[in-house]
Image (cartoon, rainbow, N blue to C red; front, side, top):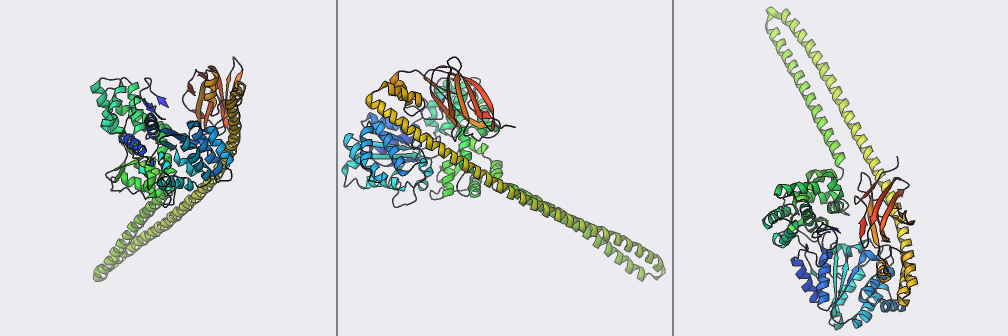
Amino acid sequence: MNKSPNSFYVTGGTLRRDAPSYVPRQADQDLYEGLRQGKFCYVLTSRQMGKSSLMVRTAARLREEGATVAILDLTRTGQNLTPEQWYDGLLGQLGEQLNLAEELEAFWLSHDRLGPLDRWMRAVREIVLPRRAGQIVIFVDEIDAVRSLPFSTDEFFAAIRECYNRRTEAPDLARLTFCLLGVATPSDLIRDTRTTPFNIGQRIELNDFTESEAAPLAEGLGRDERTAQKLLSRILYWTGGHPYLTQRLCQAVAEDAAVTTAGGVDRLCEELFFTTRARERDDNLLFVRERMLRSEGDLAGLLDLYAQVRRNKRVRDDETSPVIGALRLSGITSVIEGRLGVRNRIYEGVFDREWVSANMPDAELRRQRAAYRRGMLRTAGIAGIVLALMSALIFTTLLQRDRAESQGKRADQLLYEVIAQRNLAKDETQRAEMALVETKQLKEKAEIALAEAELQRKKADAQRIEAESQRQQVVGKDRVVEEKQRQIDLIGRYIWESAKRNNNPVLFQAYLDLFPSGEFASVVTQESGLLTGAFEGIVFEAGTDKPIVGVRVAVAMPSTGLSRVRLTDKRGRFYFGLLTPGIYAVTFSHEMYETIRKEVRIKITMTTSIPGGIVEMRRNT
């Protein structure tokens, strides 16, 4: 989470409930009222629209009214799992938040004859409902993570639907309410319309800020009221009220006291979003681009539809269309009076007509074919002119011959002229024949160029297949690493649970020594009274936006001899927790890249990022 110096604006991450820059929208009231009434609610929209912040604030309001609330984050559970491991992980999160971990674990272990889903639902009905009075609300965040699981989760959604359908015969289920949040469409998550819960639930629309809703953001700009309102109006002109883009541009304006006019806002907007570096580094622009270009459907059809929207063609919103669904989930479009429109002027400027053309499939081959057609038309034109000249010369020769025959007195003289004209016509004919030969040669060269282009395309396809094979190998290695990490986490969880049950400080310290960055490390730190800091970052390949997996990141404090080592994950990220405050030497090494050394200062209770925010490693030459 990035904050401005005065901690007013927040760009990225979940906002605290009391964050001054949080902008309440209609969705806040709709979700709160829907869950209070026991309705199944879902918030499915693009990233960085404020879903998690909305969830946190709504959960706090419900808790204040006495409701029991749990938030299940599917990214914590993992992906390379069996159904039993996945449901066990969800039950573990539920037990931690409701202080029912031991009871739920005992129920799970004692009912191993049941299927994973049945065990999960019965644990909720037989353990959670009897032990917690009043309404129980379960938020399931990052629900789109189920698409990456190696098994179908249709039964999970069907079980949620069954909870609502059985309320008449099991009244206690009326106290249980679910809310799903993520970046997906209902059809992405479950295909069977007979068992989907989405046709009985309430969809919560999370729209961009209106000008009146965004008015409180002017407070953090640090200007007089009139100037602040003028600057905020210009900010919304560019962002259209998009939550992340608006907070980001507001923060930039707040940090630059020289900006007092609309022109200053325009300059900052250009620097933040329209430069080449910004287009390749900004998280939101990267997400929109990758969501568009890595779409599982018809890329050409998706880009063509977006081009029509840019040209203000009438494109009606259709929730059943997978192409329109992909456009909406990327966040690049919004719905205005039932029609699709480009979401804001920043997206319209970054993802312009040239961007669409450059990313259209087979763009290079189409350019070569167009050049070939232009060459053929130019050659045909030259040949036509030559033939026309030859025909004119022949016609002139014949006309002069007729005149010579009708003028007997000048027959000899005209005969010589005719012979001369015939010779001239012969020369022109030979030139025309040579031009035709050259035309044929140009055609052959053009065909050779087309064949070479086809060969290059096949080579490119072969390289793409090879790259995909290498990526699959890397993914396979990542899965092995993730499985090893999961086993380590299970050992750590066993030590933690043993230490907690026996209140054993020795085991607490053992857990910290073995798992300094484990999921319970922060709790162990609080209970053991340690004051520590953390260190995180991300590693990219220089010149590209490709994260590097398996980079060895080593931190060491020379003065004490303390040292730790981590490997970057598949997103190029690393994290060190529970670091003693002080100055550390950091080394980034990989057998395929040049080694980088940096220095960071770790502070108490703070998470420090690598200087510069991102590490770029160059390949070994």
